[in-house]
Length: 167
Image (cartoon, rainbow, N blue to C red; front, top):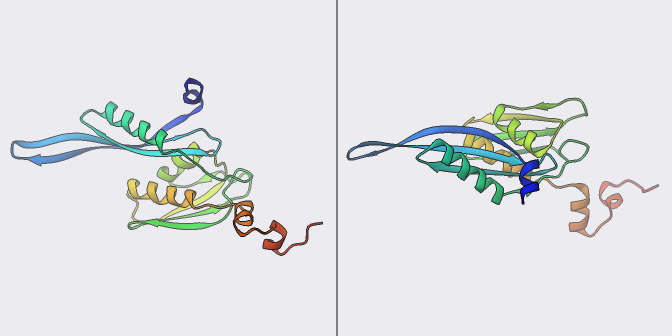
């Protein structure tokens, strides 16, 4: 377990102070969103809430580690274009040519860097609330499929799906 934690990178996407109004006044606590990745296609995102900021970040990191999943990466980019949404946030992701880099806003950029995606074009459309942008981006990455995945699901060869002859 110790060797895994050394290669994992952790990025704090957002921290905020939240207040709960009670009879005696306001109770303040902290909320954090953290992304954890190994730069090899595995990422996880977690939310944490606690009375201290350090505890909120720790909880978010633990949840992120439990929710890790594999992102398909082909030649340093994503397999296909996709537009996903969560609530009022929409995120458009496009594969990019080598050398393009990560062209994305800060929220989505942290996710792509942690996943190890080197070239991608991403645009946040609609609401830019960090929590919703993160969820939309993660939903998009989870729904990515490679050509080999599709060929396996359809029980066909890649040549049959693409319509190209294998030479």
